[in-house]
Image 1 (cartoon, rainbow, N blue to C red):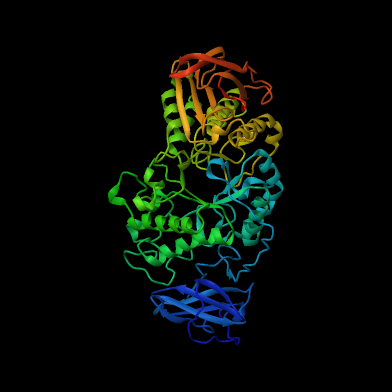
Image 2: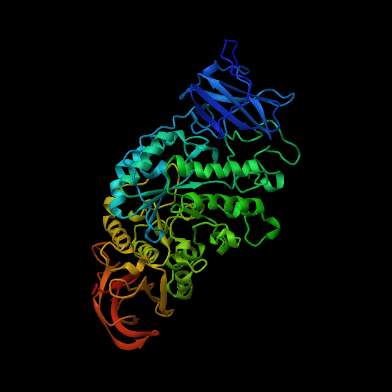
Amino acid sequence: MATNRPAAVSSFSPTAHPGMGTILIPGGVAFRVWAPFASAVFAAGTFNQWSETANPFAREGNGYWSVEIPGAKIGDEYQFVIRADAQPLIWHNNPYASELVNSSGNAVIHDPNFDWAGDHFTMPPWNELVIYEMHVGTFNDAPGEGPGTFDEILPKLPYLRDLGINAIEIMPVAEYAMDYSWGYNPSQPFSVESALGGPQGLYRFVKAAHAHGIAVLLDVVYNHVGPGDLDLWRFDGWSDATHNGGIYIYDNDRAHTSWGDTRPDYGRKEVRQYFRDNALFWLNKYRLDGLRFDSVVNIRNRHGNNNDPAGDLPDGWGLLQWINNDIRASQPWKITIAEDLQNNEWITKDSGSGGASFGTQWDAGFVHPIRRAIITPNDADRDMLAVRDALYHRYNGDAMQRVIYTESHDEVANGKSRVPEEIWPGNADSWFSRKRSTLGAALVFAAPGIPMIFQGQEFLEDGYFQDTHPLDWERLRTFSGIHLLYRDLIRLRRNWFNHTSGLRGQHINVHHVNNSDKVVAFHRWEQGGPGDDVVVVANFANRNYDSYAIGMPRAGQWLVRFNSDWQGYSADFGNHLGYDTVAEAGSRDTMPYHANVGIGPYTVLILSQDNA
């Protein structure tokens, strides 16, 4: 890439402009980089005919270098050229680059401008969130035409709005090797994947989602980097027997993860700064409404083990606290979600008491017992006590500190499948698969917590998730009734009709647990009273009950707001009873009143009273 063509030379002095990476300045561009073991750093690009030496950086101290380049402009391609003692010159992309040609191509001086006019989105309260997890490349992609893009999602936003979700959580979109990926192999953590539409595509997507009343959350990966196309590897040429990957990567032992030996070195303050900056970058630059942190247990423990204090990484824990505290201080309405899955309440404790200060976390205490209860083949083996415990589970006494679901990208891949496929492998369209998967979905929306579904779950997507397998939107037509079921559940969860506000509340009393009949009933409320109190009855067995007695919290008429056995959801559902009922005096199940309900097989009923 070197050339002998003449080029403009910058002044050999550091820039006074603050910031890392690329800094637009009047008449040109400044660059700043951390490269403590470099003996010299240069910028080569279209602005100097790719000269290796035309624009030398000046030392600033503490391993930092900077330069100002008059005439460099938005759209120019470039790389940093690093001299490390007697080694050949090393060409690397800017670690803070906001845009790349592609994961193995040059960095681009990014245009930060975007027309945000009219974007006045307000984040919903966390107890009203309904999250839709999405993989950008497969959500609305035509088979055989490369991965889907942000722009291809836009025509589906009215569909998602009408479904009732109000938050989209996108799987990672930081630049990764090749065009197809789940996104959990970030090669350039500040750059938006070019195959998905790059920075401008993400801008347009966020603004459009906001216009439809939908928050956008982003999955970020700080437990490892790469390993493919990883410019951070031996970035300034330095490595030794204990730091094989160089300045950004831990020594050999602590570097090891299930995804490669590329765990960041949280012990270096510059590396912690890099990832703290990254978190704030996504929230500020793209107006994202929250972040989901992948595999937090592998940031706080080198073995990914909750019960291995010898493997703890205190600097990783400190990084999590720093990021969360900075977000809370500047944007407290934005949510941070941990995927830790160790049932560890310290993840969502405040940092003042030693916690990591996340707003909420994916809840292993819900997903695993509920999936077991609906996937287990034999009714006799379903454990209603485990279901009860899953309904009660929470962190630090706060139900909104957990995200609850039966499907996520991890739960529908890695040797597992979509719930309907798990229920009957090879026959995911079966009556049993439809009945029991929707039973699980009803519990997601009726239990305390922040509910989440995975893309396509609402129209019974089958098989398992693959990043080269687009959603089959024909199934929306085939299973339009199942889609209607999810829509109805989401609307009840969000109290659209003002008679189920208790589903947004903290409170639950699982007052009926019958492990013989496989029936569970629970009371949900926020403040209590008509229009607030909700009673949910779930039948985990393949049998009907014409008249099943349960305790009730209040006297009077209770109306069936949802019956998952309704034939409007599927023609072969039983439409079994599910009648309105009247609660009368007389205690039952520790409740002051009682009533009888009719319920079908593998069915959930949701009942409430009209507002007075």
